[in-house]
Amino acid sequence: MNIAVTKLEEKSEGIPLLFRRYGHEAVIVSTMRAAPPTDPAPLLRLADMVSNNKIDILIFTSALGVEKLFEKAMPGKNVRIVSVGPKTAKKVEEYGLKSEIIEKFSSDNFAQHLGDIREKTIGIARAEVPNPELIRSLSSKGAAIIEVPVYRLVPGRNIAGALKDVDAIIFTSAKSFEFSGFTHNHAKRIKVIAIGKKTADAMRKFGIPPDFVGDGTLENCLSLIS
Image (cartoon, rainbow, N blue to C red; front, top):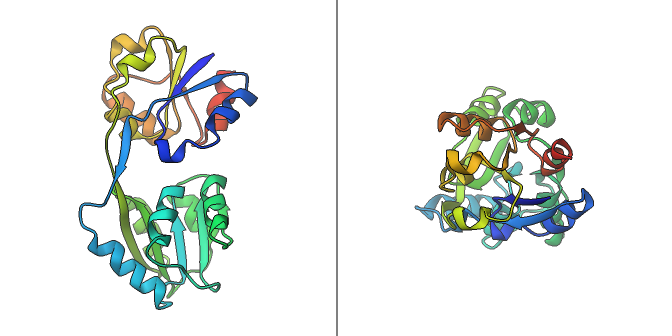
């Protein structure tokens, strides 16, 4: 099958090879693009805290977040780094550092993975999309949270022209769906997959229920299709 996937260009490395392992061809459709954060001051403050060893744990939700922070400051070897997914961890390794990998980005998973974080200061480098559930979950365990948007997502390519020759589409985030211009007419002729629950919820709000809902990974989405 030819399968469209709404990944940022900066985060699409390795996707064609992954899809071929499952017998499919990937069509990258970047319905979003990355732009600098609306306010650069929080990123500069986090970078200063990193430089001055005032952060105990760094959480990265994407490889792009790693790049944006490490362009400004590099943490010491004693900082605990947690990456969402292997691609984010690989980007950390490119800078000569190691990180723990958490496969699923959910508040419960983070709270369980991090363990005792009382009196720890945690920096979260993310897109300009707040996650109050995660902040509440970690704060309730006694940690001080510094959540910083290091980039923002803005509309990219309209999806209509890319869907002529595809059999299915995987939406990789709620924002990538909202920016896509995807309609009921599109959904009538191709399979529609949400990478996870939050993306599926966003789609349902627009009256487009997904045919499949993954567990947050492209690998799981591809196994569902196959």
